[in-house]
Length: 55
Ligand SMILES: [Zn+2]
Image (tube, helix red, strand yellow):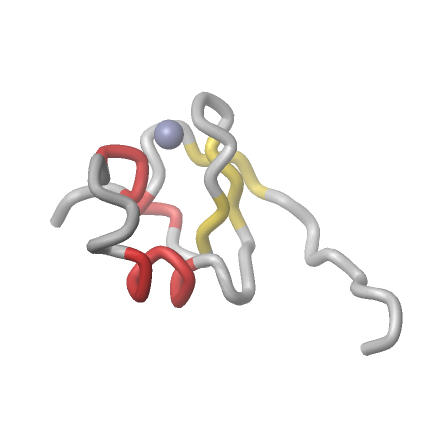
């Protein structure tokens, strides 16, 4: 499976990207993409769950 980082056509893969980034647990240290799956990023770094005000 392609990593999110390698997706060139964002518009075509929008659903997958948004779904993976809905509850992000990892951030790519190279591209800055967010994902809940470590394997979808080329340089995954663990990120703390973000607290979103009003939720
Ligand atoms: Zn990346």
